[in-house]
Image 1 (cartoon, rainbow, N blue to C red):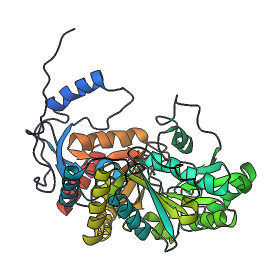
Image 2: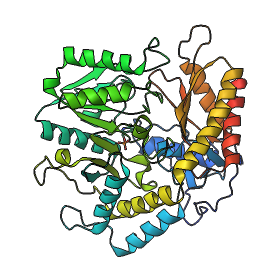
Image 3: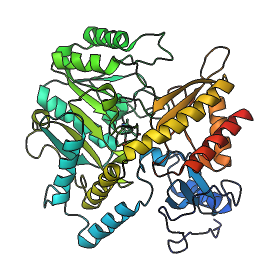
Image 4: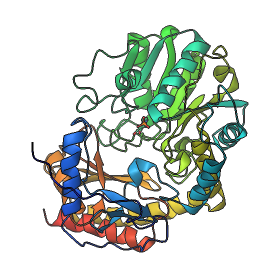
Length: 457
Ligand SMILES: Cc1ncc(COP(=O)(O)O)c(C=O)c1O
């Protein structure tokens, strides 16, 4: 076996992240450059092939609206690590709070030796989430883990088992959340059997459901659920107020309130999965607020802690208090470093008025992407809210999804140093999730690069 001397980027060589990084797109090499390519070779040799990479430019620093790769390219970030770094990468408040906590203690396990920051995060989430009823919170590590626990709370409270999720839904990759997730490849293929007592209902998808309004689409879902599952068996209905991986599908107005009303009439817990939409992303603190709904339980993760792993279930106290003591927990859930990060992150959302910043970003994206759609019939729809927007790419003659073109546009943007992500059941959606710390000029430039990429294909 031959050994190859591969470069290693040490922490001391890397530039410091945070907003001090020059806010510019800078292409020093082709992307990925030679150092990233060497790291890709190491990755192939060391990491499971099942762990895919969207853009194999290896990152050494990030902040504001850029990521710096191992070859010193400065990439415009329109992905935020999938809607995580809303407050920015290495945001100063978060860095200071985590550093201070790091010097105090790193871990005790809250269910063994508790600490106050866990409670403080719970109090903040109880205050910030929709509704002024009595609430409780429990903390976990990932979005999927929080979704699993939301189902546990609902089952414990109702004494029922069935859970209804929707077409195009994405709720994670664990056994139960794979069952809740709709799309087979790549999320489920070959990984069955899946958790039982999970059923699927039709979603409101205004571009593709024949013009149903929100109430009609909800009634269609309710009819199917009543016929195929039965409210008497149902513990919960779970849905994303705007679907994420499924294609940034914004349900027609009235869909969510109609479902919520039916759940309340039938002792079914309504769970809003706001893992991707939460924390200012959509131009409100939570996407549920746009439709004025108050979910029974709300699942939170991603944007909650500035990049540290933390997730939560927050909701009605009677539901959250249903499990027996000890029934809910885990070694790392609500880890003190993640809690310190969450408190600093929440402070940033509130005191820096990042809800408003998300709206500003949304206005820019709506205007730019709308102009692009006017000029190019291959953009079937521009949709989303705030700093969570997408374009759906179609064959203009038939309206059929064009996944091939979508992938080529994303690849061309990557080659020009702009990180965009694709999504959608049909793989034909490009989504834009810039950090709320991105300066306007980078946002304009990033969108222009995508427009030029599409124009050239
Ligand atoms: C709506 C939604 N729910 C759940 C998850 C799973 O979160 P995690 O990847 O942290 O397990 C995601 C992740 O993309 C998501 O978008």
